Length: 152
Ligand SMILES: [Zn+2]
Image (cartoon, rainbow, N blue to C red; front, side, top):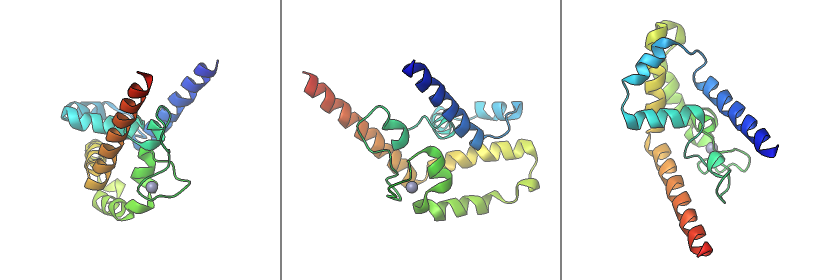
């Protein structure tokens, strides 16, 4: 019962995040996705589904705080959406991204789809964000090792 609830909740949360990143699903976007490298695709998936190396997600399985490590706000949960849109520590990066984007009506839908994906990838590859994800990855590796050692 609890598991079922958890599943529904997680699924709807993920759907919610994906919808924020990709409000319109279409074939052109699917086609564009196929041209991306494996590494970039993984990054895109991590960002758009929220299933990524972000503390908000990792803290569900690992003993670590869910709060954002960049802005160090005590309330902000570190999710891909927070990093993308809300994190005050990344204000400059967010403004640069929006400035580069231009007005949405200036582009054809198909072009803006490719642009959306490239922008998401480029943004999450910025040093500060890539470092954060790398750090999170190392943290869970360390926690796993500790747990294994304890169970021996
Ligand atoms: Zn933050």
